[in-house]
Amino acid sequence: MSRLYGYGDAKSIKQTLKYAIRLMLFISVGIYLSLFMAAGPVAGLFNSEQNIQLQQIAEAGLKIYFASIPFVGFNIVISTFFTSTEKSLPAQIVSLSRGFIVIIPMAFLLSFIFGMTGVWLSYPLTESVVALTGIISYKKTGGKRDV
Image 1 (cartoon, rainbow, N blue to C red):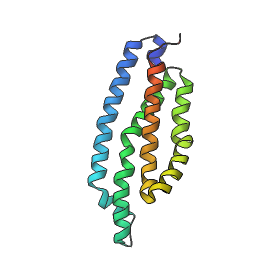
Image 2: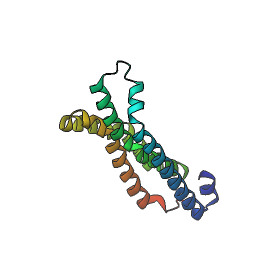
Image 3: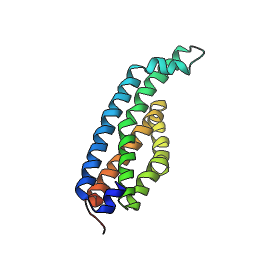
């Protein structure tokens, strides 16, 4: 995308972004479905004591936690787009929100409201909020060339 941006090829940038999002969705859905179906064996890898209660909590938690995969993929793609097209502020907002600004309050708030389920939910909800922020930023700046 950086090269296309340098060439001033806005049409190819949008096409590349569209392909990247479609590929990300295809891969994300495949990974999530695989993990959803294999939550038991995956949780079992970390449950060497065969604790049934821990197994149940981990299986449910993995299904919730990994619902974030499509949002994570989108956030990486949109952040790369912003970086490649010299839109550093939206790229930084996406990056900092994912790793610090949104996740920390989300974890505390949701764990307070929903207990352990809230802890599992904090990551997918953070990533979805950041994805929404990325979409809004794209709509405001994405189609404009700053040259």
